Length: 444
Ligand code: NDP
Ligand code: 2IT
Image (cartoon, rainbow, N blue to C red; front, side):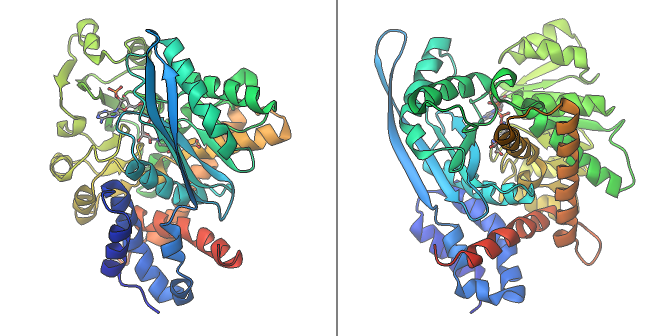
């Protein structure tokens, strides 16, 4: 049997109406997988590996009721999408944002299958979260929400079942409140969440891992070109966990980072951020505009994204679909030669087509931002061993994982003219192990 891409997408669309982000992610992956399966593994078509892959093993949706500071009852919706456990326990972040819905969590959980497989660590794919808006909430409101959320989630997760972590709106503080509640209900101290604090089971370098890993991956791309990152101009979107540590590592590597952004707009510093300026950014919360009062050559561009500014390397590190076709064309026109995705699916399908056509070095999120989940995997290992490894050891492991992911991308993505299609390489490279494992484990 051979699979037809158009009919497959129609099938997925009919089964998942009103889920545009999920469909976008499935199309982005299966466009590469279908020709590969048809040519190399036609039996995987008979086994309906792809049809099974796009069907979550389990979707949990639940009510989260909590009290705000005015003692008013609030109701949110919580989710966990347990997508695929062929190679290990479900693993992936929790997102707290009013934009959260099933389409977004299914796309994230689907991407996570391939990303986690690429790390070489035995972890399956999952994602979860809630349509809760952490903005403007007090510390106590955040705690009450996290406790209520975990009071249902706890029964669906476990260190050998499903290990959540952070994502947008979920950082160390939220992981702490959720971990405390899990421990209180289960009366066990286990590695059920990653991104924990360093005093209670967390791993060194986990907060930094996604941003650092992104720069290690971009460094591999530049090594391959026999060039250096030092001296290059970089635009970064976002000002959260991923963006911050991407900027820090880029500055360490000698690059000139000229932008950060958030949902209010973009901060442009033509002189380039320094480590000192970055420490100042961390004190600003979401008020990036305030930076321009201290550093006079910097400007703030309300409601604008960073992609209009001339750069060599663009690192979208905020959210999905934040870089569209016009942005991609502007980047190419301005001489950008490399795009590394710190966020998950930040480039639209049309933007990716522009990058591929221009033969830009385009590193998709599932490869380039895998450092975060990779160090989460290392946190799980440390928890199982009841050890804590040094920062140096974790950082070395992170570097070698990113190098291996790059190698996998080159192996499966190198085209006849020498151009490396990192998207194709990561899709196929992440898929093979999962497909082989699904076949071996029979019909589940
Ligand atoms: P954070 O919550 O720490 O930061 C998110 C940042 O992105 C904030 O600056 C936020 O601005 C901005 N942002 C969010 N939504 C929008 C939007 N619609 N338009 C403009 N800016 C927006 O999240 P993370 O840094 O952890 O996550 C960023 C991305 O990286 C996500 O795509 C996530 O899935 C991905 N990722 C995260 C990993 C991790 O380990 N944390 C691992 C791998 C990928 P504002 O405050 O104004 O909302
Ligand atoms: O998108 C991601 O890979 C994450 N948010 C991190 C997941 C994890 O389990 O550390």
